[in-house]
Structures are given as structure tokens and as C-alpha cells.
Length: 246
Image (cartoon, rainbow, N blue to C red; front, side, top):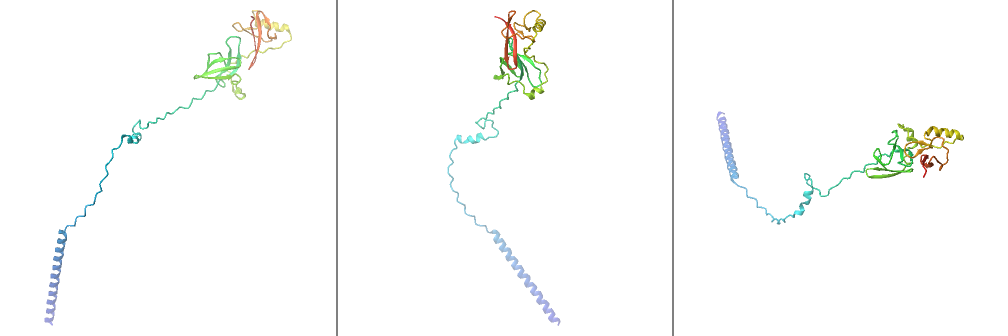
């Protein structure tokens, strides 16, 4: 029994030795193959064929125009200069006309610059607000503003009904006197004497022309004291005056 056990042990030892030797041999062969593979160099790939490039043509200077025009930091990049025109300045509101007087000299028109403004008498050459009066007669007026002339009818400048209600007159424009019909000649004579200390017809307002006094019923064309009575019709009513008779 002991002999069989010893023989079995010896056999196992022999098998282990043979297995170890076989492993060693395979390990050494693997190392040799590894070294052989490491020593080998891969074949170099073939060099690709490079096509021949076409010659580059010179660029004309005119082709750079787009580059010059589109440079953001260049002030003259765009040759098309855009000139911005300012819109025309609107015409200011026209003044209002309330009355007209003409005693044969420099005519007077009573106007206010705006609604509620004070009424004053203006002559040719005077300025009212931004406008200048360049021409004036019984029916028409010419206003000038920044070398522009506007010809207006006096009736066009009269305030409308809604505007007239808002007007707060600081200075009341004198209205041309209207003939007052009186049947008593003595009363007429008394009024004329009170208004005309010099005994001449009408009221002395300065100058050679005299304004008709209230209650003056003498017909137009009457000559009295070297004066002739003249009655004319204006857009604002009748104008009565005494002019020197010629």
C-alpha cells in the first residue's frame, strides 16, 4: 500500500514538472514571437499623386471696389451720398383782422396775433408775429414770412364764430363810425359844434382828413368848410370821412 502511494506521488511530481516545463517553453516562444513582431516595420503607404495647380491670374485693381465700398470703418465706403432733406417748415397761423380805417393817408388795419390777443392798429411795413405787412388796401392784405408772400382777403382773416367767442380783447379796435339818422337839424348842428371846436365838419383826428361825427346825416359829396364828405363801403361796414375839397 505504501509503495503504491509513493509511486502515485512520484507520478504527480513528474506530471507537475512536465507541465511546468511545457509552460516555460510556450512562454519563451511567445516572447520570441513578440520580439519578432516588434522588430518588423510596416510598409510605407504609397505617395498620393498631387494634381498640378493651374496658374493664378493677376487680380485687376477694379475688382477691389466691393471691398472698398463695404469696409465698415471707412467713411467714404459708399460713393452714393444720400442727402437728407429736411421737411419744409409749416406756415405759422395767420393773424386775425377786425377792422380797417383809411383817411386818405396810411391805411390802418386792426389785427391780433392770436385768439385772445390784444388788438392793435398796423400799417404797411409793420410786423405782427412772424409776418410783415407789405401791402394793404380796403379789401386785401399781403403778408410776408421768410421771403414768402401770402395775399389774403381781409374777410378771410376775420375770426370764425367759435373763435370770436374766445377772443378776450385787451384793446378794443375802434370801428368806423356809421351815419346816425336824426330828424332834428338843430340836434345835428349842436353835436357837430361840440365835436368840432374849430367849426369845421367832422372830428379832428390829426392830419388833413377828418372823421365823421356821430349823427352826421349829410349826404356823400356834401362840401362844407372846404371839406367834402366821402362815404365808402369796406368788408367791415361803411367808412365815413371829410376830405379837403379840391
